[in-house]
Amino acid sequence: MFYQTHLRSIALILALGFLAIYASFGSYFAREIVVEITILAILAISLDFCAGFGGMVSLCHGAIMGIAAYVFTIMGVKLGWPSLPSATLGLLAAVLFSGMVGWVTARTSGIFFIMATLAFGQMAYTFFFKSRWLGGDDGMGGISRFDLSWLGLDLNDALVFALLGVGVLFLVYVVASILLRSGFGRVLCGIHSNENRMQAMGVNTAKHKALAMACSGFMAGMAGIIAAQHTLYISPELLIWTVSGEVLLVVILGGIGTLVGPVIGAIILIMMKHELSNYTDYWHMIVGVVLILAVLAGGRGVYGQIEVWLEAFFKPQAPKEPKEPTESKEKEQDLA
Amino acid sequence: MDASFWLLQCLNAMQYSMLLFLLSIGLTVIFGLMHFVNLAHASLYMLGAYFGISVSAMTGQFWLAFMLSPIIVTCIGAVLYFTLIDRMRGAGPMNQVLVTFGLIFVILDLVRLGWGDIALGLEAPAELSHTVSFWGISYPAYRLFIIALGLVVMISMWVVLRRTQIGAMIRASVENADMAASLGINVGRLFFLVFCFGCALAGLAGVAAAPIFSATTTMGITILIPTLIVVVIGGLGSLEGAITGSLIIGFLETFGAVLLPSLSAVLTYMLLAAVLVFRPQGLIPARG
Image (tube, rainbow over all chains, first blue to last red; front, side, top):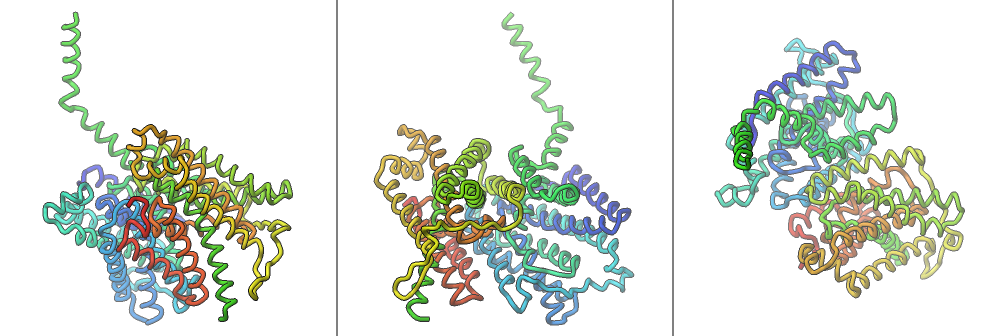
């Protein structure tokens, strides 16, 4: 069950505020990092939506993101469409693909779901990798950013782009939060805890799962559009399964099923990557060790663990605690 | 496209299938028995290749490397078993996938630290470095040796699993581990033995593959996905499934690459998706 607690709101505001300040006062390089963080964070929220609340641990979110980026680029560069309609079509393609994956895999669960999503993701990856028309493994360039001059914004400015990215991240969080607090979100959480019972109550679980994947695909598609506009170049690397694995890593690192945890996980991972790559070429190993430790430590993630601690700290007056000493005293008296 | 072309491609497909079989049989039995998803299995394959190259470079003897490398990999597997795998057994598929995904990263960078980023080659042993001519084609003897090796492992696995006591114990534990334990089978020890055996086969596959494909840091990730596909298509935990799966994927990928180069890779994934949707338990599941 999802609750937008005060703690989560505060954590979100702190995280987004940190990103905005870091971009505003940092160098060009810092702004690039902020965009990278927002892309990963949006993708992680989208995965947390279906994995943390719907129990669908997908390994094809990189592919969903990549499909949106590719369709956006095909429309814009190959067919010369204006950027806004091509972005809409990119999002639509991501929604259709992930909804289709969700519908087809609705009957599978556990490791079979993971494997099935892996297969669909790799299918998309190899399709783009082999496609000569789309540049194959060289990818495609020539993308241009949105023209927002009618708003007085120039997206080619690194700061404006970074701040817009943070804004989109906020919007995606709000959308995910509203969806999870709606009746649909409650049903989704119900399916996660006990699918058979939800079926017995007359819920069409397959339909809900497919819908949840489609919603998640919409968010992942947003990340794809930003990613394409960020580097102005796309390649099949976006869709490879290790990207999805890394997103899952971010979700676990931040705290699965908390929605704000993935944002924090993305900040930690990207920062760690950039700091570590200054010192060593072998930062993957450290990321791997951190991941293993995060799972061994209980799998709550950084934010999830802090949330548990803070909630325990702010709720010490549980009715049991003052009682226990008196009981034991009574027992001592009995013994005496 | 005459008969010799088909024969050549069949041999190539067989050789690839056997390599896939050596990897997937370990993975599938570990999964069937322990319900553990070990994504790092392919990293052990990579370690097998690298250790084989090192031993062979130090001693100059291929066959010594061929024997020693699986043993070293087994020892590493045993360490992993006691530090991580055993602990993660009841933790659910997502946590297992994550931990072994982390292990892939760690092993990858350890290999880069130890051996560097450059692809390393291994010479096939002198007695197998010639080509054999038969039925109008000539084929490298070493590749024939790999086909033979796979067939030998396949048959001995079948004999062990179907005709010996330990095979019966393994089959019983795959069927129902709790019931097997209450019948007096030391299931924990059996798990450990099977895990080590799977690691040894992964190491063996690695050192056997090194003379054909040179050892690179990406070889583990590259073979992981086809191996997982074999395991899922065949049915988790079943020997017959692993045999069928590796033959299907080996032939599909080899002939697909020759006959339908643009479609071949997508074909494999489509087959996997179809199996998962219409027959999620796999073609030949371990449990009837």
